[in-house]
Structure formats: C-alpha cells, structure tokens
Image 1 (cartoon, rainbow, N blue to C red):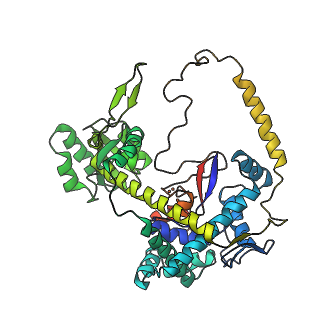
Image 2: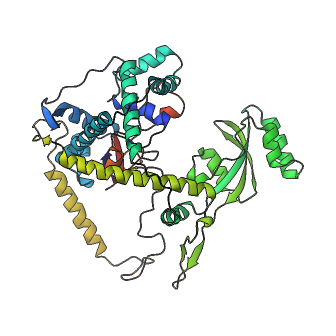
Image 3: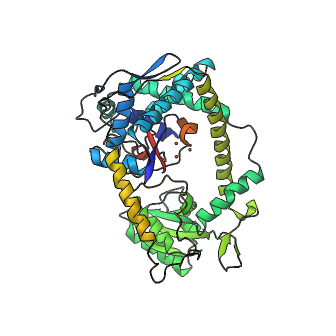
Length: 458
C-alpha cells in the first residue's frame, strides 16, 4: 500500500507536465461543464505563515480532491486506506498545511530575489497547452470546465515558472564526480540488466504489402536494415529507439522486442503508429560476480561498464539530488525563522473519520498474520534460518517510473522530486497522481500528471 506524498512545487518539470499540472491544479471532481465555484466546508483559517492566511476550506478541498482522484470517497475505504498507510486525518491535514507553508515561503523568496519570467515565455507555455485542443472554443471550454479563465491559467503558469527558476538557484555548479556516479551506477545496472536497444522501420497502417516486401528483402539479406529505414520509414527519427527499460514503448512494440536477441528482426508489428519492423541492436548484460554460495550479484566497478547515455542520465540525477538537498536545507531553516501558526483542527470536516475501528481491523489482521508465520513452512519453502532464494522475500526495487499503487491507489507515472524537496515530484511519481485532463485534450499532455499528490512506500 502506498501513501500520499504532498507535492506542490516541482524542482524540475517538463513543458507538457507543467501546462497540464497548472490546468489540473484547479480542477476537482468531474464537472458538468459549468464553471466551478469553490466549495464551502467549515470555513475558518487553518494556519498563517508570516501573516498570510491558509484557509481551512483550501486544505479540505485539496484532501477531498485526493479522495476523489483515488476513489476513496466512501468512509470505509478512506478509513482503511489511512490506517494501512499509517496516516490519520490529523496527520494528513498537517502534511497538506505544511505543503502550503512551503509554497508560501517559496513565493516570498521569489519576490525577495526579484525572480521574474517574461511574458513571451509564459505565453509560449499557454500556447503549447492550447494547441492540444481542436479549436480555441474547445480550449476555452476546457478552462471553463475547471473554473479558470485564460488569464488565471497564465498567472498559474507564471507562478510555477518562477518557482522553478527559484529552485534552480540551488543547483550545484560542479559536475558529479565519478565516485558519485558509481553510487547510481550500481542501481542502474541492477534495474536495467537485460535491457534491449532497438531500431524500427515504420510503415503506414494501410501499406502492409510494402512492409512485407521490405521485411522479405531484409530476411533474405538483400537489403540492409538501416538502409531500409532511411528509404522506407515514414518516421525520420525511427532508426534508434533507445533502451526499452529506460524509455517508454508501446505494449505491442515491447512484446515483439522481448522475443528478439541481438541483431534479430521481428515480423510485422501492428501498433497505433502503423506497421513496424523492429530490430534488436544491443542487449545490456550487467557484470556480475559469483559469491561463495554460488549466487551471482551485479557489481559495477567502472563507469565504462554502462552505456554512455545512461551516464548522462545519472549526471542529471546527481544534480537533481544535490539541488533537492540544498533546497530542503534552506526550507527547514526558513520554517524555523518564519512565524507559522497552525490552528486546531475544526469539527465537521468531511475527511475526518473515527480511526479506532480501522485500527482494530489492522490489529486483527496483524494477529492473523503473526499466527500464520508460526506454522511450519510448507514443502519447498525455506526453513527457519535458511536464506531465501534470490528475489524471494524482497520487494522489487522500483525503477525510475512512479510505482503502481495497490487497491484503491491509482497508477502513477513520471519522475518527481522528493517530498518537500520538490515541494514541496523527486516523482506521481509523477509525479505521483495523474493530472486529469478534460476529455478534449490530446497528445502527451493528456497523460501528464498532477503534482497534487505523489505516492511513496508506506
């Protein structure tokens, strides 16, 4: 079971994600198409930061939107979720308030440092998002659906860009050292052992005859794959698709690639893009050592044991990690010096449930689990004191994509900075946390993630 991680300001964010996040940030549950009006709950002030008020209804709406996003609108599913993730309504409220506190402190710092973003840059982001809609009328309708005007959306984008520029002031000037990169290299090699690199030739969906003719010539040795790609592919960027484990391929493409070894060529593969012929160009095998027990363990001793493009990715990760750490240190100091007042939690909040009955359920489940562990292991299981086979008894290490949540949790995608360090994605995950786009949206922005809540392992 995963736990919400409150994220409100991204250290690094792509164009499409930023545009989608800003649009989704003001949206709650699905509307009927009319402009939304802010709901009213208990009223009052949840907290103040240097005299700036954080409204209780703002905090409540934020939490209620999370519940709607993850399908936890009924009391039992919500209470069970909070209990299983070690949260309570009180601690969740504190986390949300803390995220707004961090956001306000960043706003103050942006103003103090006179960080600005020019109008042309802001408009470029707005235009990019609007281009995902068939017409200006559709774009305006999408804005109205989430209760925003274009000016409000533009202001939201400006604020996010200014916050991003502020975060970048914490970036280290020096590049990552080989020692720092080697720390990442080990996990990279483990996660990407067996990764496959590929190229492809793309044909129109209705041009199967040409695709089959080209495939026959390639298999007969009469036509080189790369030359065929240059001559026949309708995608000029089709030659190199990169590594499957560090990229994102369609299910059909990935399935076909899984069946290939180095230098092998697939049959005709039908995808949403059209008809593809795929060639596996490289297979990465991580270097391993064998222990006294006969088990193989991945061991990276030099950076040249990894593909060069992975090293570039690791450099960015080290930079981001250092940026996050520096920002986190700054934020903690700012919170100590700031005048922060958090008011008591009022009664009548819709997300406030009696946790006692859910705690009892957890205790009963724990007792049942404990009793089962006292039983003798079944035939084939490791006896007490024996080490489990490799991979047993351990959760799979999560790669760079945000994890898929269990049960009521929603799938998360993309990489995001750590809790307050991104603050307040690193990664729904990216986000984690999909940003719900109006139905009219198309292209990559339609799948962009909302940074309202990331997920972290409980």
